[in-house]
Image (cartoon, rainbow, N blue to C red; front, side):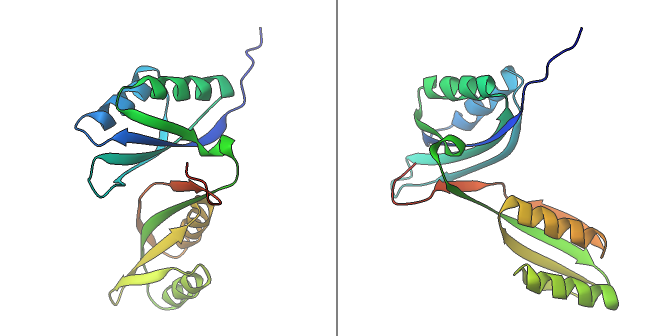
Length: 171
């Protein structure tokens, strides 16, 4: 007997919610209870009155699972709107990373050269290390981190993905 594996798709969901205690726990609990994975999670207040927040979740799964996640998120009371940026059309996704690299001599020079190519900013430096700040698409950050592994990567901190639909319309 063969088990047929369904195609896994990566989706970026934006969720507009009331900014109230416990909403993030409710949403994370929804994912946990059903065995869904959250690859990336960011939350920010988006109004002057501090009463609405935007949550961006990156997850993956077959289309039926993504549809189920979407439907269950919309049923939560403090949720105003759920948008699957992957389904809506072209969108921009970015994240911020801090990357610490230790090295001296030629490795130090090469790390600085690569940082310039990737437009990474040096935000801290000592005689034996750098901390680079890099903003961009997740693939760009992944590539930079992979290159830094060969030059003395010490530590990486990433914010998670934030995304928006391209054009004038709101998500």
